[in-house]
Structures are given as C-alpha cells and as structure tokens.
Length: 101
Image (cartoon, rainbow, N blue to C red; front, side):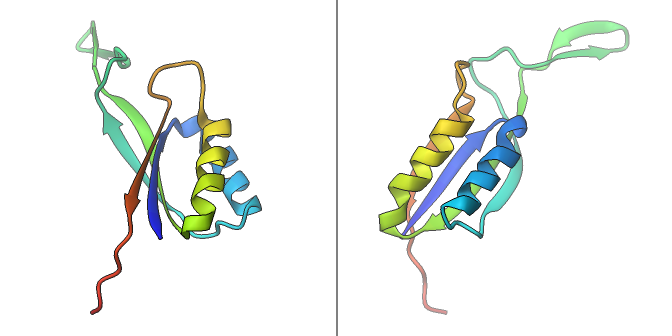
C-alpha cells in the first residue's frame, strides 16, 4: 500500500476526482493548502497599494492505494492535472504503514 499525494490547481480538482472514480478510486482526501515557490503568487491590493503576496492556493489530494493501482493513479492524475506551468502538478509517493491500535 502507498500514500499518493498530489498538489494540483483548484481548477483541475473536479476533473481529477471524476477520472479517479472511473479507475475505481472512491475514497480520497482533499485539503486546501498555501504554497510558496518559484511562481510570483497573486497580486494583492492592500490600502490602495498593489504588491505580490508570494503565496498561492493549491489543492492537495491524498489517496491510499494498493501497490498494483499506484501506476494507474499517477498516470491519471498526471495526464489531467499537468499544465505547462511550473508547479501545477506535484506528485509524491510514501509507503503506507497501518499501525495496530
């Protein structure tokens, strides 16, 4: 079992969720996160002055998948969420260890 974390743009969330359901992934965890990276961020107007906030809002999708599904999940997310802009689709994979409670 693996934990797959994908950081995507909010505009791609519905498409990614729909595609994951089509390949049999029903349970996903979705979080809204704030990231700071190479992109300049959003222009913000505060007290009449415009400045670059430096932070961008993204969506983190987390999936726990069996080893045999990991490749299909990564391929599905990558095909849909990737754009030509830097940082629009980051995928991380971690081992999943279930602790006996």
